[in-house]
Length: 129
Image (cartoon, rainbow, N blue to C red; front, top):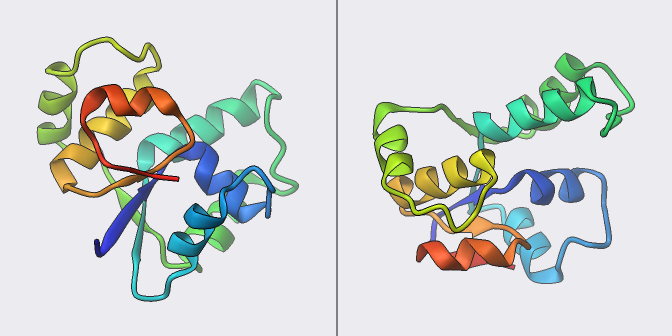
């Protein structure tokens, strides 16, 4: 395993030192040799949650992304046509479109997803928690 894709909550829990992040997930994220990827879908979800007042970052979103994504050198995975085609083929085990797109990206990238969400298992995608 050389790269991991962080689910939105895993990214936020890591950045905010939230105790809900499992020790195994934290160790994988902290591993220097590991390539850490975050989907633009997660960044989009963060923006939406901030707009709705469901999430406070303690700073403007652009500053948060600069400090915690760019400066930490997290790889940002854009939405590509192959991801959308993989998404289209996913059954609706999970109703959250953000999570299903992250699953599709993980399948296409062949990268495990760092997530506490047990419904990811229904998609035969490797998870790490």
